[in-house]
Amino acid sequence: MPAILFDVLIPPTPARQLESAFDDALTRLVAAGKLTGGTVTVDENPPLQDGVEEALRQSYRDEHEDLDLEGASVIRYALRVEGATGSINQLTMVLSRFMTPQATLPADAVLLEDEVSHEVPATYPWAVEIRR
Image 1 (cartoon, rainbow, N blue to C red):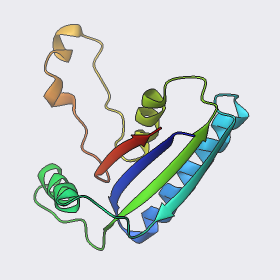
Image 2 (image 1 turned 135 degrees about the vertical axis):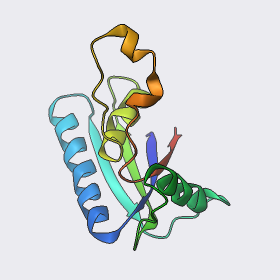
Image 3 (image 1 turned 90 degrees about the vertical axis):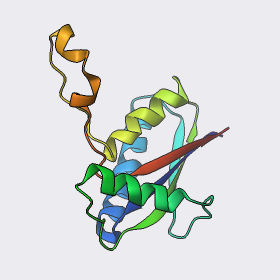
């Protein structure tokens, strides 16, 4: 069964809300027939590769005017999915919208050429790994 592992720099209260959002999303995907099953587990003290936490903290500072995310720690959300009818990579990107909102893009193709001006900073910095 594939697992999508999100390591997220997030404060405690939004961390619980994010867990609930992931759980609700998996429940809806099962009800829609896109998955045959799915679970979320949370690890509040995950084993991280060297530098991951600092990279997430720096990412937040870079995208939020050098501010630190007060009271935040890295939490791992392990989403185990069964019977996916589509791409696990696509599912991962859809689920990542809980941490990084989708940008509003202009309809004009010329304006779209300047991709950087349309980027939206992550609400909570994250890293992902897919295990099959």
